[in-house]
Amino acid sequence: MNIANWLYQTALSWPNRPALYEGDVLRQTYAELLQATCNRAAWLREEYGILAGDRVAVFAKNAPEYIELLHACWWIGAVVVPINCKLHPREAEWIIRDAEAALVFTESGALFSDKADIQEVALCADAAQDQKISAPVPVEDQDLAWLFYTSGTTGTPKGVMLSHDNVRQMTLCYALDVDCAQAEDHMLYAAPMSHGAGLYMFAHIRAGGAHLIPASHGFDSDEIIGLAKTRGNLVFFAAPTMVKRLIAASKAQGFTGDGIRTIIYGGGPMYANDINEALACYGPRFVQIYGQGETPMTISVLGRDLVADQSHPRWQARRASVGIAQGAVTLAVLGSDGTPLPAGATGEICVKGPTVMRGYWKNAQASEQALAGGWLHTGDLGHLDEDGFLYLTDRSKDVIISGGTNIYPREVEEALLCHPSVFEVAVIGVPEPDWGEQVVAYVVFEQGKSASVPELDSWCRQHIAAFKRPKHYEFVKDLPKNSYGKVLKTELRSRACSKTASA
Image (cartoon, rainbow, N blue to C red; front, side):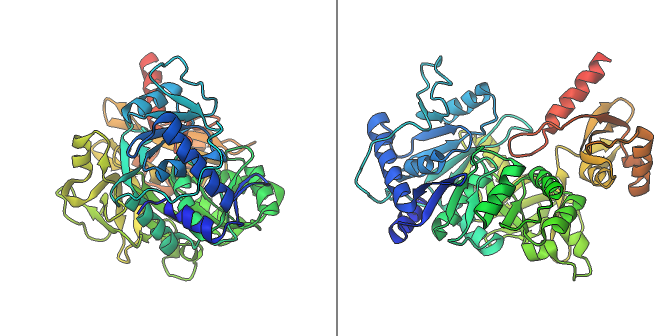
């Protein structure tokens, strides 16, 4: 089934429902969105020769035209390649060429004007008008729909091949495990639509809910608070860093979350202190998901009742977990020999099910490694408890080995974040001749606050084993992040190594 059929069916069933807002301005009803999609689909085919299976790239910020364009591509059987808008044009060009994209949409339509072999169009370009309304072309379940390039935070980006069925199964998991989309909802796109936020549009299209592009076309805490007050029933995906900043702004304004129905968080570690503070401010509006591009948004889930629960004897530990396996997948923690480990034992988190990618684009070797033994090997380390709750330890590549002992950065970060002066922190391992690696912490202080190295060292000694504490601190104004809110630890390692080399 072509995933675009959901828009077609909803628009025919509920043509007058609001489909798309830009800020507080209604841009399209579902009937108008359907017409615009059919117009653009015909335009892609007739003006640019886009055919079924062709790749069409989008390198732009969130915009009202985004949903229309993606569906126009699927309408004719083409494949979308959404690219992180914060990448450098050189990085985007690499993806465009790797995907062999026939066409790329950008904000200006002239970003690659010096590249004669790249066919580029402005995202807001006018398409053919008043085309006949027609259904999307039929496709097979395993036909490619979305070519998602990994963030490249640990190496060269890889193109994750997601089929129409992958996307459908992900959406069914959303409805079953994450949140029940409603016609009254406003699905807010504050996080990049090129990633998980965009994938969550399908459930709300099926429900006939409205889609809301902020006027800023990005994340702005004050803007979100304003939209909660004017539009109401906001549902949105946010990285933990976004949640943290939203809560800080809300506390400053005395805003307690009215008008926000659900915040789904994931894409990075949510520290215990941060979710506790968020719950104290907003109440039970939070759902945690854990996933990867290779199984989009669908590995585990901690539903709103579990996030907010304080009745279970181990509620604090459970709140620090990433929840239980989502309904369509099988989850396991495997040892180095590929066999499942018992509860409490740390190993690699692996998953199988209909949400798992077809493989990596033009990379058979990486596909074979990632899908070895019928499992998706996530590269993340963690353990399951006796009730099936999953706890993340760290990325396998981020584990620090000092004196032959494993140190998990997240444990050190959790300890430091409990300090009243610390706003954000990232912990990395830096090569050290005697011990192999030493622990280095990059610390961002709360506004107007600070702490000395001896004070932080004493704090860590009170909360974690002495050998795990940082041996060096860097006090910085902010941490480098990608557009999805993930801290770029590769950049921090590069900084640390450059500083060591110049010393």
